[in-house]
Image 1 (cartoon, one colour):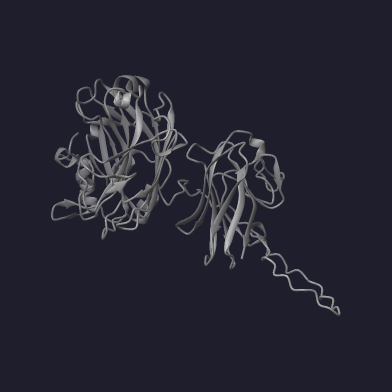
Image 2: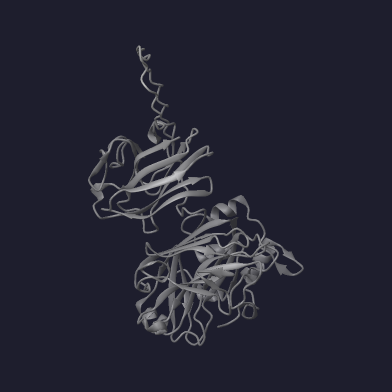
Length: 466
């Protein structure tokens, strides 16, 4: 395996232009803060590798990157070489970020390339902005103030799997019970999470989805997170990652895209296609809508009038009762976005018009209160002094076994609860979040990275208790 800092001595003309754009310090390329326009562009949907290079990224082997059709980045792999294509580009700094993109692998590359030789794929990293982007941990070197994670396509003969498969290629002090040694920490991506089940194969001759979520740790503690989905199926769910050592505060600030074979190089000419790169702060990879969704305001219910108690000669004993629940749909909520038509109050998401849904229904069980939405969606609800939020969550019955979503509860950039992947036909799951001391929460439904077809989702019996 090669050491990247030694191999990347030559820069393209575009990289030199990027150095002028970003600024230099003592002759070292620095990835300075992005402008608001650049940040919006980096987080936009449909970005290509060419976009990241043009926004100030440094690149290697630019001649191996072409665009065979609009919005598609093609990386060429030359026989007997390790060139491929590499670009590292600054992104808005964050403690949690999600990278999504699409990949298309020709079957001939799968069978006569990946089956024989390992290959690197894009991911995320963090590195000091005073250093060159090539400084970020990779190539067998873990920098003390840097970290990275990428996909790695492993050859079929490794572990006698019999087909090319994925692993997470992590440069961090600790993860998955392992410490960094010579070549990073390698965690297989499997049909069961974190190495449980069969090693996940690589689809061919069609587009498939990749989603990588990184949440940084408290410096020095093993409480960082890493989630990876391939084609909508989660194969990595680590909750013990030490991305940063004690005293290190480097954020996620680097898009690291590297596609090249390991030694001894490509067995034949080939290519791999990419499209729709998107980097988003936080755990929800959905982009902001191009036009704001209408804000729906529901007046708070009028206080009920309670009759005066009837006095008796012998007062009844006082019974301590639990606080009454307050339904989220009866509060002054606002809809930020919804993936299909308007989000509905106390009914399912319908055919695209307002108030055209039916009774909320998850796996045959009906609910009178809640929200009917469609991924990707977000509703903001005030907490109003409550301590706990609960909801029965699931896909609407009429989608059958179609669709897959994830329900999440957020306070700003802090995730309070996550349902995991919920699929059509499954019974409702109880989602609970501690909301004590919060001003408002965001009810988010993501499309699980596999598109939003049939993703009619229900926040049923959504309520607060004190």
